[in-house]
Amino acid sequence: VTYNTLKKIFGFDEEGTNCGKIAYPAIQAVPAFASTFPVPFKGNKDMMCLIPCAIDQDPYFRMTRDVAPKLNEYKCTTLYSKFIPGLKGPKGKMSASIGSSAIYLNDTAEEIRRKIEKEAFSGGQDTLELHRKLGANLDIDTSYQYLTFFMDDDEKLKEIGDKYSRGEMLTREVKRYYVIH
Image 1 (cartoon, rainbow, N blue to C red):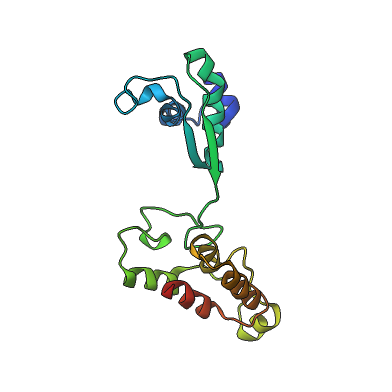
Image 2: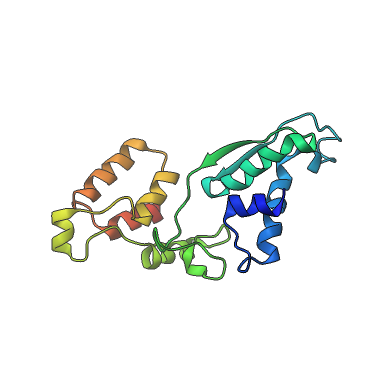
């Protein structure tokens, strides 16, 4: 992969791009080739890799697919997943340096409860009166979005979504439901 190719794919500019940004695409591409894993695959390069990732990783694996034949490798296949939003909402970002921006695997039940109740971005309206009139915006409500990922009962999810979007259910009720279930 040449610098010019990286420039076209990622929009690097001559002066504002550091060497880490230039090297990262090649590092990101490495697990797309079976030859990267000689021990578990016992040296067998004769297989394709399936890469589960989010859509933001697409440019890296498109680049990888372009160079695979030149390296005598198979092109990888990608399986895209949906983003799980950070607790701070659609404009927030999950970050290891901001502990309250995400729920971690090692968080206790109490930490999860506190984070959801205090930190999870609400799609509800500013006042109770407005919320009862307009309902919640489910697209930006973190607790509701988490329910769409983790709730097994589609009928109950639809019921919650319908009630919440009509203003019949409050943000704290959705958060409480998420924490309990």
